[in-house]
Length: 66
Ligand SMILES: [Zn+2]
Image (tube, rainbow, N blue to C red; front, side):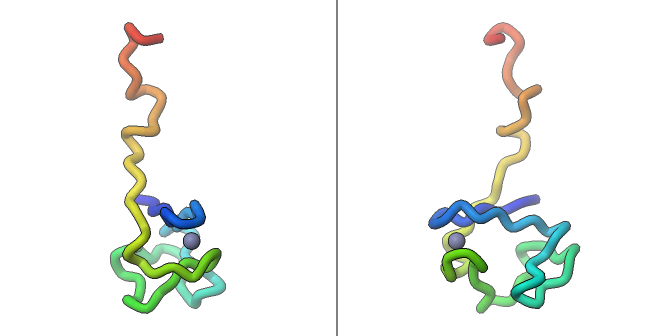
């Protein structure tokens, strides 16, 4: 599950982690330290929002709308 910074649009991908922030690849957003901040804009975890992958999946669009 990816998370997006609502301030700058940075995407946190748990598969990549945050090398600059000493976060190892494979670290879930939930397990990031409480003082972790966005590497792009410095905002706290509270501004991040979960990306609903189902919502962005093109197959989610009902066929009668295509
Ligand atoms: Zn940010």
